[in-house]
Amino acid sequence: MSWADPLTPTVLIVEDDPAIGHHLQVGLQSSGYPTTWCRTGSAGLLHAQKAHPDVVLLDLGLPDLDGVDLARALRGDSPDLLLIILTARSAEIDVIVGLDAGADDYLVKPFSLTVLLARLRAHLRRRPRPVEDEQSVIELGALSIDLAARRCLVDGAEIALRPKEFDLLAALASRRGAAVSRETLMDEVWDENWYGSTKTLDVTMAGLRRRLTTIQQQTATPGSAVPPAIVTLRGYGYRLENPGRTTYERPRG
Ligand code: CA
Image 1 (cartoon, rainbow, N blue to C red):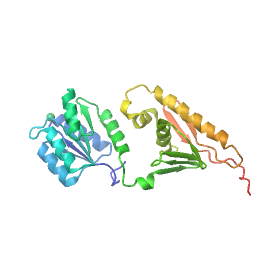
Image 2 (image 1 turned 60 degrees about the vertical axis):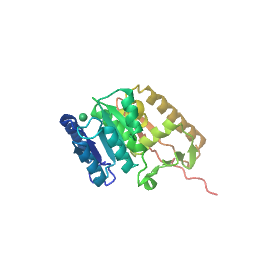
Image 3 (image 1 turned 135 degrees about the vertical axis):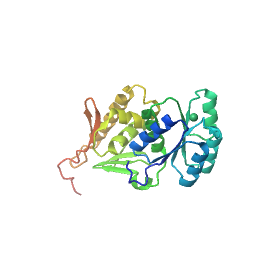
Image 4 (image 1 turned 90 degrees about the vertical axis):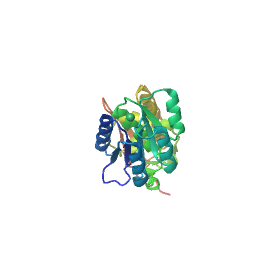
């Protein structure tokens, strides 16, 4: 994600608390999200109508407008908006009212920037992107992953993966052989409980490896593709390596 990328989601913060607003703006900007901060509800609404941000972080307790009313107005103007409510009220009823007003998610103050960024990534990943068609198939040597169809093929042979195994392989393959930390994988594949145990990552990784090994055994003929290997990087994470093909020519005729 970079400033030059026109597909980078833009963020609007509507927050009257100067410390929180400043902290969020600096944090989001430095994470690559072009960010605007409005200190009142009416300024926020005006900006949203003019600039059409992709994401709005909305404080419910604003000096001029009722946050829930504002959430409803923003949602009414823009059905595709990712709307996250920031609230100091943790009472369940406030959360329900906020979600009913059209919010996609909520964070109860105080929350950490890390948690906010993880939620943002999780939500944005699920959203259809305009370039989905171009980017929906990842080719890495013999491995082909169709993200839209959720199909995985090695040398044309389909591997049946469990949902999380597919997500895990897609997360590794989309880095095209670069090392990926356990934290990143937890964020991307298990976003809803990234704070929980990472044991589930080990279990899913073992299952994925087992399936890749199985396909290798099934397709182990001269000239057939060797499926990608998942290398463990101790104390860090994993890397997907694509060894290519066996050195033999495929028999002809
Ligand atoms: Ca406030």
